[in-house]
Image 1: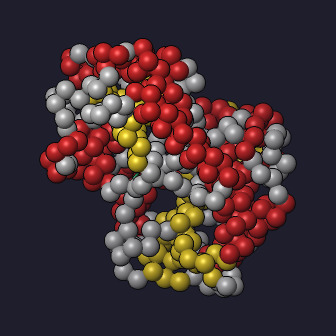
Image 2: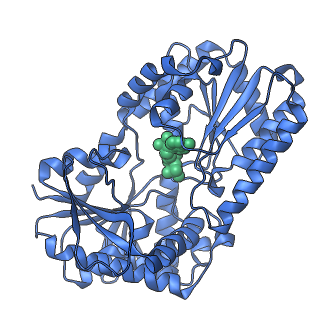
Length: 448
Ligand code: ADP
């Protein structure tokens, strides 16, 4: 078997690399003598002309630095201020600048030139996420014939959104240079096929195959999973280590865990919790919402705005309802160690996972894996998370419908133990069958 060559924007640089993708790909990378390549996270004065090997670890890793201008235009610019909002249904937040696009293409061309000399004819290449859409195209220009797969961790937009992008057609052409394009959900496959036909002017050959001259590619859903068994064990072990103040008798804990991103619907969640408190005085002092949201992409205007909006809303709700023994919302703007999160998930009665748009949402899966099967908590899940296609036994909600969300909070808090156990068993079965190992296997088998 040939090697697996894996590319992602950031590479896990530590001596013991960790994270979902490392778990998913680590075994195949070490078994095939494969390589992982990505940016180092450091800024260089001039563009690197060769890759740097990262010492140690279970598989080979190579990295390169971005320049200040590349970081601004390729990463913060085209990736995070054009593609991210577009792919999350927020065309209104796109910042279209020719410089962003030029640098984005340049960086992808540079990466192709850096890696092409390392590629052997029987290698398979797996490219991850929206930072690297043109990479297969650039590698084909250099003459590479290898199987190249792409996995998009975000949603994919349909033709109406794609029309808002001046180079929508070019994106479809880039994608057609992959042999396999993996997406999170069936809704993304439908949107992508429609965009490839309407915007890219490709022909739909059926069964997910698109012909876009001169190439043909396959588009299919591979919903990403987590390391389910490992996460259950972690939560079992860690709940005992939580500070005693967290688990108060007669006090129910609802938990929300999301990067502070406008796609996650945190303001909508706070408003719905406010509505719930307004309707149900009997629950005052008996329930609190712990929202853990580390800021990301600071300095980008839309992220500064979401921070202000959520701080304002949580302050207002606390101002209105808190008393000397109780604050309804605890809003933490800091990352929390993974093991503490696992314990908190298990301690919570309800999780609020209510994004306005999300590729998958791993928090929903982690929460379910963390529960005690005898007395599990309830997952309230947005219909707009990719996870909703698989996790139909959650309480599915429309995050725009404040009243429905408030009603679901009551349903979750009042749900009988029998019903909680039944729903949890079905959800956990799904997560066990389609875990992260299943995901990488399914994708690589399809890539061939
Ligand atoms: P996204 O990739 O858009 O951030 P996901 O829900 O798919 O959303 O994945 C988020 C990951 O980051 C999860 O594994 C989650 O546990 C982790 N995470 C989210 N918030 C925090 C936090 N405050 N501290 C530590 N880890 C977090």
